[in-house]
Length: 568
Image (cartoon, rainbow, N blue to C red):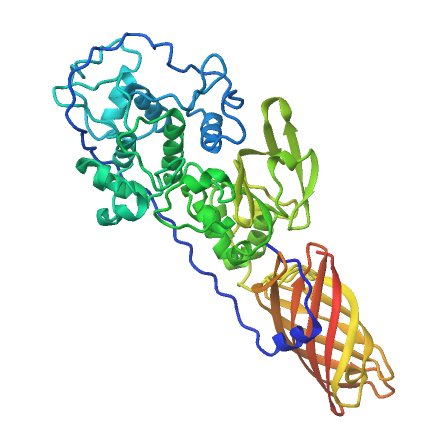
């Protein structure tokens, strides 16, 4: 959320002449559609009812992390591992997953029940149920649930065919129907699939809707749908994962993972940190606050950054009215501090985290705790819910609590402003443009011949925040005619400036006026006009540059460049 870079004195001088306010692009968040009734597939012949208990091929819960037959380079490993860790799928008693084993309709119904346990019911199964699904059948409840939530339908003759291997196209139609997906131009399916002509007519609309929703995953050829081929357990995991991404319950597979190349990109998506957060219904509060704080553009820069991202539930758990107060202009400083406290420079994966303190972009450390026995990572008192969501410019770790910096008092945010509305003055505070600092630098004379301002001299600089918008910036330029400059400045919010190599940076403009005091025998005093920029170099240092014009006996103009140490 702050930028780290260097800026040449020439560019600083030019920037002083053309400062503008930053504008943050609104973040658009899409919501999933409601459920619809699925279309039955082609008419089959009756089947023999299945036994009442699970067959030997039916998986039972076991270790969901280390599945012996899903190697690190297996194409569907990211989908399988993520669903296993979220208890959506499980392995077999022997520790295998059997990724290439076909999935029956009963097994797919069980997977749907596990993945979409809170889905609303849109219809009711008749009292007798399906004729080939006895009441004591192992998957009877799952089949009823999949039917009533709109995912799966039966065949003519009131049969379900629980032991039939489900074709890939039926799996896609089931998820498209259950999620209520719409849209997609059926005439363009040939641009996505070489075998689009093999898609059954009843399924064309659902496949088109699933395609533009990025639900379809084709391995090994992304353009080969193979609609009538039996769905495997690996393919089922991939489809379910993408469906949960569509609902905002999981994050998209990172673009740098091989598995991502098999997702049919019906709708191109940005993969930077802010775009990934905005695409998920779990982080709508976070993305809204980033916009309010003016920090969204910065987190879309190359970075890299690591963000411990609180979910909507985490923000909802804050004391009543806290969110509303944080979005008020008078509390913007606290909001910026809180958001910056969730960001760490660089891309740090969960495996790279170690117990101890980790310095945030706010300058204050968080305490990382590692529970190796349970494969759990905590930051302060927040637990990492989902680790290593890889973005194009860093990594997101979803957490279940909002991290509050030690210098932010949440309880005070809930109190109404006191007094007659006059801003609270706190000398040395941070402003919306950045922190207060004291430092050293140099002055380059540009015109005039009256004071040290017009010569090349050593200078001491400072910034003392007064309110969220105002600062006083005392400085002294030493020389034959030493001059003291005391301007009061209006500080603007940081704005994106560009990048150098793989590092992005922002600038915080300021303009102001004050007095110039020439330290000679007569102690001449004149008007001072100033304007410049601050460039944060991290939590400790700020690069600054500005042009000063002093009207004492004559008009002296100088370019002041320096570096300050942030003390608040």
